[in-house]
Amino acid sequence: MSVAQALFRHARLRPDAIAIAQGGRTISYASLGERVARLAGFLVGRGLVRGDTVGILQPNSPEVLETMLACWSQGLVCVPINARSTPYEVGPVLEDAGPRAVVFGVDYAAHVAGLDPDVVGLSVGGPAPGAAEYEPSLAGASPLAPVPVHPAEPAWLFYSSGTTGRMKGAILSHRSLLFMALSYFGDLDPMPGDAVVLHAAPLTHGSGLYAVMPVLKGATQVLTASRSYDPEEMLALIEEWRATNIAFLAPTMLNRLVAAYRGSGADVSTLRCCVYGGAPMYLEDTKAALAAFGPVLAQIYGQAECPVTIARMSPAEHAEALAAGDSSRLASVGRPYTGVEVRIDGGGAAATPGEPEVGEVLIRGDIVMSGYWRNEAATAEAIVDDWLHTGDLGWFDAAGNLHLVDRSKDVIISGAANIYPREVEEVLLQHPTIREVCVVGAPDEEWGERVVAVMSQGDGADGRPAEQLREELTALCRERLSGYKVPREIAFVDDLPKSAYGKILKRTVRERYWKDHDRLI
Image (cartoon, rainbow, N blue to C red; front, side):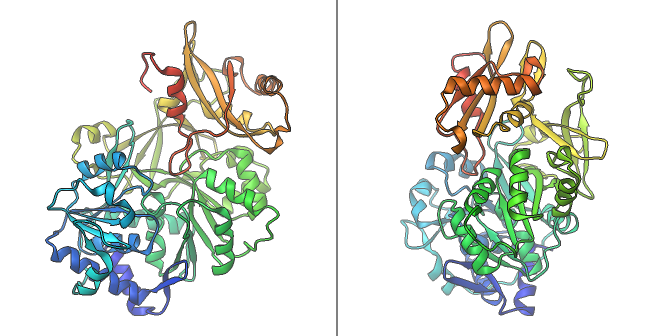
């Protein structure tokens, strides 16, 4: 079964129910089914066959979801590409994926100008050189019914840096997508059919995976209209649509939503589940979000190679931990999903007595990718004896909660001692003046590496001199950390560099210190 088959079932059973809304535009399930069938007819009519890849380069829009569903209905493989990418960044993805068609927003014509003439181009929002136009093409195509797909067939190529830092396409099968959705329903949020799911993060990245669940349940999906993240718009849409779910927010996005909510008077009482993940969510930020919105937070831990479905902490589990005052549990990523095996590999002796043994997080189960697209060597390196090596470091507590420490490449080795940046960052964020922080290792002639903290200040800085803040932050760290973990250097910046998804770019910060030094960033 493909996700598209669920769409056509809802189109028959609930034709008038709203499937997608954006701005003043709404699309019913019956209309969505018709548009997806016509798009499938267009693509197949232009010569695409089962297993061909289709690039998707657009900002959030109904057409993104239509293209995904049309691909899955015919055994085609969708390749979502971040709509914030430059032409330079798009090129390697298109070269590796080798799409037979690309559906792109008209504003991205320059991004795809170098496509082979044999590649079918389809422009959304207006005409573009060498491409067919989306709406006329749908109007002129004959609807095509979905075809049966084998669970092992590829459905999605998820491009990310992978576990070794190079851009690669993780192959997610139809089985993986369905397993992901069923795990979500069983362990995190049942999402009944009356759910209204709000998307603010890019559908061409993680939020697109969260679009699978509403389609399976016949729920309504509301897309923000802004091209950039606008928390005030989010609050307005929650009220207007009485949204029950927020599909996915990176921690930075959630923190901005909390800040916008305070004093706004917005009614968010309909929210039942707000998923966050994709980067570390610091303990104090989690507590602030729970205080603002109540027990609606749901944390997920996954990566491109096993999306959404490694570990989770449901809204009920957040509430339990908060009521018990269990800060350690709140700081974890929860427990592994049902049906997923997670183990810690290579945990060595703790640097300090009483500290947990840390090792690489390994995953086994149906959610794990089939492999990397056309890259057998990278696949063999990442999946060994059926276990996916995530590159993340973590440990389990006695209650079975998984605690992430850092990416293995981010560990600082100073004087032969391992220092995990997140532990230091958690302490620094307890200072009331600090908004965001990034801890990295910098070259040191004596110790190999030294701990450096780069941070931005919040509203509470109240004009204090930088040197005074450095003294206060150092004292805070000395009080709560072993001496070798205390930052040797503290720097202040207006803003930390971030990816299109709101993640702090630790690599970019680190590069400033390792330029002209012999170290793999």
